[in-house]
Image 1: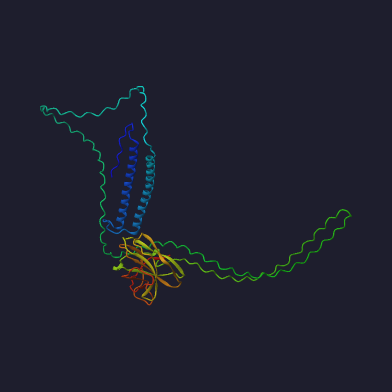
Image 2: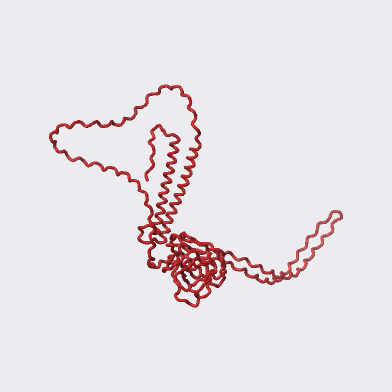
Length: 429
């Protein structure tokens, strides 16, 4: 992109007000075009990291993708700041252009001023064009060969040409076959401890025990001697007050009242299939060649829990497709019933992705439930863990998959006998 040209301004500025305003508006447009190029480059950087542009020999890891995402976010923050400056600049320019009134009538010509002093001599004009070459004279005798002249300095490097416009993005190639599962990575750090549940209400105070009996009153002290009667007339001085008797012994303490009943314990309103910090696998939407399938894993709270949302951890967003989560209650070792569903999403965002349940679901204590994800977003991957047992036991399996499903709905019966030994991380909140 070439730079805008600034007109040659001589010592006497000849730009009109309209030309100045047009130059300011052109500079704003050029800066906006520059931001557009920068944002396009950031978008292509994300596409390259996610593998939707050719050239990446191996898929980027989650930390690498997060690092690229952080870089893009920093550039977007700078672009937003620049946009605010350009918006302010545009407002100032439009204020200038809007405030100018119509040009007034030309005033009468003033009297001719006195002749000023002679100005300084102007700069020497450019050399005139070279005259035509004269006729070639007779060839003189060959002179002696002169010594080789010194090598002249290397000329300056020419300006870099303008960068060509970016070519159109090629069509996305068909998704390649799922490669073999890579070696298990190191266990990630343990996730942050969830917020403590609200404190249960304080139990009612126990009744106050009866008051102990009042101790016996101490004996009255001896009365002081009566003062002698004064002479008639002035009243004699009052006799001194007798000493106070000793206090009686303290009565025994009454029995302690019974302790009030303990208040009900608060609940934490949180349940998950596996610990977020224990994720060691990235589960594709079509894992093991499945078709329109849902994956589920057992979850257990131990306390009554009422949840209003379900969340999953997205490691690769993919393109588009149906995405839904649900809560299932096991009926026996091979079947379960859908008791709660979220709304359906058609695209994902990376990291923690949550959807609201259509109605809150209350999970009773000492029961297990399945948290299930229905992922048909093409190219999407979810965080999970390699775990579980093979074979059908007399109890529901740790994890399962079920194929050829429509969208999940409350009351639907699901077959849970197809064990896959992969548990997606799903949390009820």
